[in-house]
Length: 437
Image (cartoon, rainbow, N blue to C red):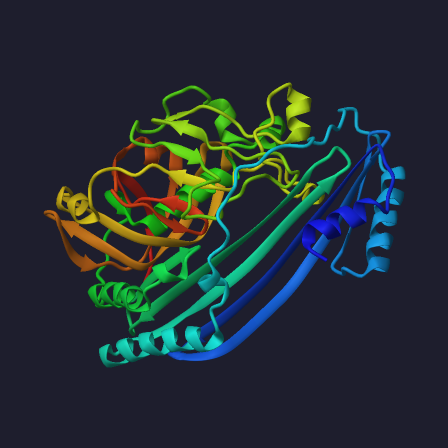
């Protein structure tokens, strides 16, 4: 059976005031390498059928990863039983009804069809490039094919599929490293030789790193680093559930100019560079919306429950209800600017270039204050040029403060960890301590 047929079939096995069946399935494959050789090649195929039953405004969930009819009947019955024993919610639960959706392109067949041999050949080419430079490499090359289907008793019938590929590599010497990555729905956009050259150039340029004192420095953030900051903002920033719980930084700054006017953020489910979606995990239609407009937070995101609870409009941001996460923006895009990275660097009298962060964590979510280490290429900029590689530093700073000083954005935006983002030039970032490496 097709996945939507499985949703509809399972729906027929249970009675309730409202019933929803969500089917997700994926095929994913990965070739991993370290110390300049391939050490792992894996493939996984899995599925999940999640049934939600609402009776007398009491909600129950059950899940299976089998498509066998007996398993579907059993999971439907179990969800109904759990709903009968669940507490009654004082907020009326109203699942979405039948909708029309924007037609999206089918996933890229070449991306779905990448073979282990193709991934291995790409890795071999990168190893052959790095070895004569005295560098060892590590990383992973993956591709995936995913499906989502939703049917509910209010008439929702929705299905979609997507595909993506990701190649990331780290090149290492005895005292330096450099990393590069491309993630895309179209494998034709992955050029392994360009990726390895980027990583190796960064590793070579950062050899024999010097130390600088902790403190505040003008900064250029490559898109990898900038996307990590934007991702941390996302986790604590836009959800109506987080706002209700008092843990959402946006609610305290709504309508206020807290960032540079160069900083605009969208949630765009139709951007072809990311994982496009026509609907959320309740089957409500998706649409593009502005989250931060020229430095001003302008909205939160809602699902059916929090729309009803707050009297706001559903924005189509439901996550799987069984997870309990509440609404969440899933397609973050930061608006680009009109300068290149080289032009940004040329304007810095004395500062640093940060390639990326690692082990980053929020320490004060309402101030979006975080701490994390630099990695895979930290550089000193003097008189508009890269002067030397630097020993890594710990950053402890507020993302609000950093991005309030955003001077300009790169004229190219790229996807990293699901965030489409440009490189950024900011007035300063605060290093709280140094390292020995």
